Image (cartoon, rainbow, N blue to C red; front, side, top):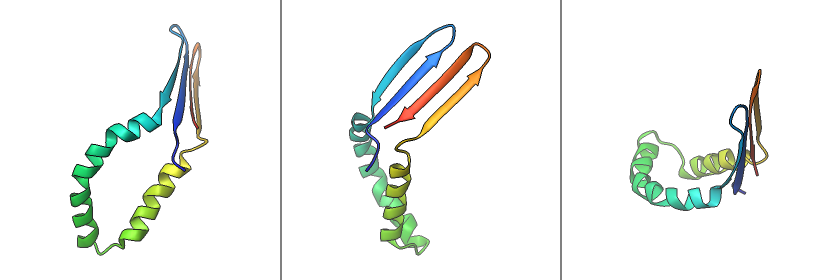
Length: 84
């Protein structure tokens, strides 16, 4: 399943926490994906790549993002990103 929510927390001189509903981002990117789809299909056919394998790989990349934790710390600053 693709991720639906990301939490970004910044601790430093300026502190904030941001909740990003990724399902809204996916909806906004849908028109862009529809425009780029013919070019992606041409590229797949030109490289003789199987369409099913490419679709499965892209889905697995997005599914693999779920549960990702990224934390970067420096003296006096830290950034934390969690993808649900």
